[in-house]
Amino acid sequence: MNVCLIGASGFVGAPLLAELLARGHQVTAMLRDPTRLPAQAGLDRRRGDALQGADVAQAARGADAVISAYNPGWQHPELAATYIAGSRAILAGVRAAGVTRLLVVGGAGSLYVAPGVQLVDTPAFLDHVPPHIVPGARAARDLLGEMRGITDLDWVFLSPPALLAPGPRSGRYRKGGEQLLMQGPDPAGISVADLAVAIVDEIEQAAHHRERFTVAAD
Image (cartoon, rainbow, N blue to C red; front, side, top):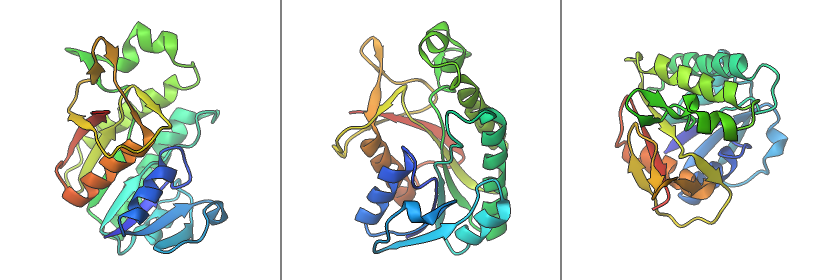
């Protein structure tokens, strides 16, 4: 497949790029500084700004699917507003490119921990997550709310589990829907390498359409 990847040099994007290339996909990676990625077979590096829909459209044109691992950076002084603006520009660019399949890597904060209660609103989340990250988590929830009303794209929103960290690739994971996955009494986790496996599996298998799902270590 031809895949356009936004955020290819980031925490999620870097192992995702490696997984895509290892499976033989052709990847167009759009990023502000293409030299941050080494040249390699199967990779087309494109200069572009996720805040500019025209840049996204140019990079995505001809792709079978677009994956957005966009994050302006957890230390960004206007994290929430910039995340929403960039995400909306990506949506506009995907439409302009004529691509219908879009996978957005979101956050765990919008997952439900009880009926009507999302993780981002719980005292446990607010007590354990650095304050500068909270606006980004809420912005990702807002984006999911906007995407639920989109009917002209075959979108999917993938929320990682509460714990996402570097680690080995096992190639295994379990799926969930709207609820936070648990490991016994504690929130479940996954390595970023196995999150990449789940993302590429979804791109290849298209098991989800206009919905959110989540994954965790098996």
